[in-house]
Image 1 (cartoon, chains in turn orange, purple):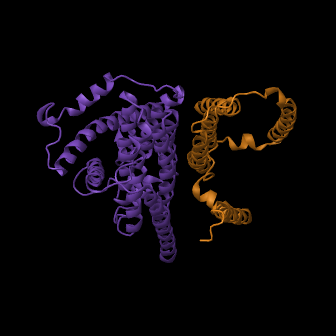
Image 2: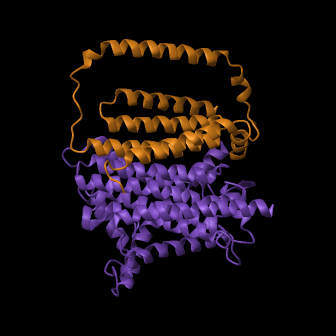
Image 3: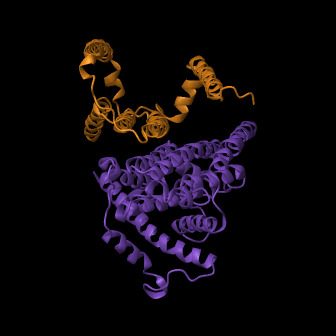
Length: 173
Length: 326
């Protein structure tokens, strides 16, 4: 009972936040809406007993990634005004394309969701250690070891790339 | 239903407690700072100046609220709220005593005890930085903006070292649940085996709460007052409340992780918990009275080039030690 109330509240907040990202005219407001959306997603993860994922969602995405987003946005926006919309109608065919792809995505998601039979089985009150740090770590380092290691390599490449690109041009130090 | 009521009551009591401690702390800080500087400190309102915080509070309540021209009104208004709410929320998972047995029910002293307890605390405190950066941006003032940006960079940088300094304790205790961490220290406080982690944590906790000597976001000789330059009255007071409550929270976490939580001989556990927090709070004031502010680039270099690698090494050493001991 209580959990379904929380679910609908969090779902509504998540959708409002997602809408805010798209509709806000000010980039800072967009970023803030995304934070609201991510926090609501964290609550949804909690309802699924995925405590670790919920906390990581907030800690990493809402707490670190979005803060850096805001950092860049506020720095770039300093002293500038919000751009006025002069080219709204030039975007007509982008609207069409986005609508098409959005529809395809929606159909795919709906197909997966409706075809799944795990929804009812997960809703039980006792899910054991599912979602705990230990269960998460075990899965990460056994079943998903290869993707995990590959991600580490990708991150390393990104770090090296940042250092190379961020170096001052012409400086041979 | 009973659990919901218990949680609500605990939340209310805790919020009132934290906010009253804030009032008392402002007075204590002014008095202790005064002693450090060979002056009596506030001593006019009430006996020995003991009612000074009431006068301060009244003054702030009655002060005119100013919203600068060109400010983003909505963001400007919610920024202090974000800071305060995040600060109050973070304390919810701190166990400040053993479970209470009352009316045939066992009531844990913390409001919620998720098995990811400490991560939850870090997640919530990482949201507090939004208050600072949004306050800086929405004030439409270059000093505020610079203060907000500095605070963001500083808090993100020191959050990493802080998180890593704590992993040693998590590995040694074998749990992220704060209650398990406290009971793991029944015989030996982690401040002994985890002394490196403790030192790093204490440095980072001062940086995370924007206190001297790491109070660069509000460095008054460069940035007027940093992110809260344009704030006045109760909105300014909310930032102060958030700062002091954050100090209490990081002190409680230090107590819980390294100083055995509420464990202690003779006295009741809650008293022990308060004593340990009070020691940390005094340490905060002591630092402020003693150390000059760091230069900004030194601060960042120190965080990234010293604290982070040492914290990593500490984690590695602890993991190796635990693996061998097992």
